[in-house]
Amino acid sequence: MSKNFQSIEELLGEDEGAKEDETTAQRKFNAKQREIQDKEIEKLTAAKAKSLGLPYISLVGFPISPEALSKVPAAESRRLKVVCFFYDGEQFRLGAVDLTAEIESLLKDLAARLHCEGKVYLVSEVSLAAAQKLYVTLPKVREVVRGVKVTEEELNKYSESFASFRDLQAEIIKADITQIVAMLLAAAVKSRSSDIHIEGEEKEIKARFRIDGVLHDVAALDKKIWPKVISRLKLLAKVKINIEDRPQDGRFAVIMQARQIDIRASFLPTSFGESVVMRLLDSNQEDISFEQLGLVGKAYEELKRQIERPNGMVINTGPTGSGKTTTLYAILKMLNKPETKIITIEDPIEYQLVGVNQSQAGENYTFAKGLRSIVRQDPDIIMVGEIRDLDTAEIAIQAALTGHLVLSTIHTNDASGTVPRFLSMGVKPYLLAPALNAMIGQRLVRKICAQCKAEAQLTDEQKKRVEEIMSKMNEDEKKKVDLANAKFYKGAGCDFCQGLGYKGRVGIYEIMVMNADIEKLIQAGKVSEFDIAAVAVQNGMITMAQDGILKAMQGITSVEEVLRVAE
Image (cartoon, rainbow, N blue to C red; front, top):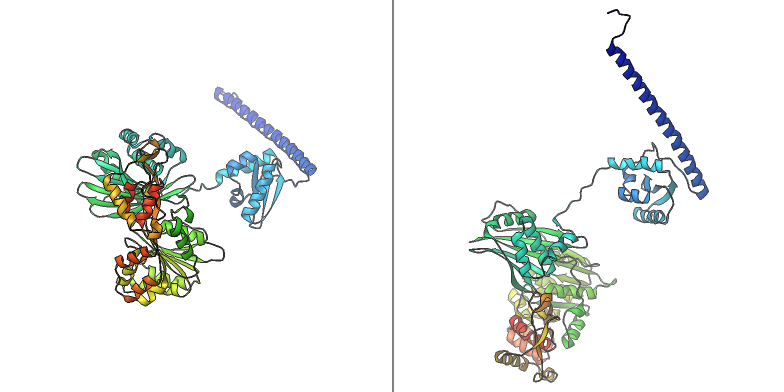
């Protein structure tokens, strides 16, 4: 074929090239047209800004730093049609399509939060869109959650599925491993449990909740799934999954929108597999004031008088779980005033108190070491989590004798055991007597459910024990009690209280105030609990058991509950 003629392929190629040139030309034309339109929009925006008395700026090609852009979140930027385009630590600038009340509110909020001067510029929709494209370049900040994050919806979904523990059992049978753990946590939160116990037995795995101080069976798990459940719990508590032959302790948190529940988990090897106990610590637990503790009459007035003294020691006694920390926190909250400096040393810090300096004791920071340092911090009030040894006791006594009010706890059964316990540590009697202001003995009793409260008849045995307890009262106090016509109550059990007949707890107390008679006994050096208790009752002290019976006569708790706890 002659070289003067083009092939079909060449002719087609030229045709395609012509089309490409045409497309490119069209694209350039459209781009130019958009450019002209954008310039017109910018002119109109500048004119609008001038009429409103606002500065104007075009953000197309404007260098916006990530730090400035992040001051207004992307979602809020799209909703309000605003962007932060400048920030240098001293001032910031916002670009908004219109100056609305919400934009003005945002300007004030940012100025207060960033502590710098702010200003609003008017920008066009085109300009704003160009700036908003930069949000995709911002690094995504991943939220670090140290625990199990549970939304309110998830918690309600599980808690609404069961009105009673029977419903929980039915739901658990159908659930997978992750759901089982979430259900148990949701049920524990709903029922206000303080502890979850999951224990291996020969034929099944038993789940129990401690509600108001008493354990209740809530569900049974299939033994086949126990290894998976225990692995899930170990994973959450950040302990070693493969260790099954020795105890381990861990912790995690259930994080909800409005509050966080810290959970301490303990794993213990047993003959039928590992046992797990989880202690629930609700950081947003309802605050209990001094007036709500359950102290009444003379006990309330005596303790109030003693804690308002500028110096001395107030010691709270009772076994683990008797509410000692709650009582001390309620006292601290009442004493917490701007003119008063309060420092505590605790192990652990269970709840945060606003305005109180709380320090955590540890292996290298013992109560004794911490107390020595605290005294040098010029406090008015010192709270020591527990006095365990002579060193701590002596420093606390010296602090009480040198102008400080010292609050602490000690492990004895009742108030009359406080002095013998101090003396057994080796404390000198002549220092202890002037240092002590008051000794508190306490227990927690369950309150009768208000929804199902009914009058109850006492058994002959219960009547005999009640009469014996009340016969030991001081004669003056005994005259105030009409035991012959007293009425007593109990809870029948309903859905509101999970069929238990009880809902919530209240303290029963004995307040032993230092007096001349007790001081003589201490100075003698040979002191028995019975001698001190007898002298205190002669001086009008109401014992824990008597306080409990008085509360039972008022319909607050039952005689059965008082005898279970205090006798």
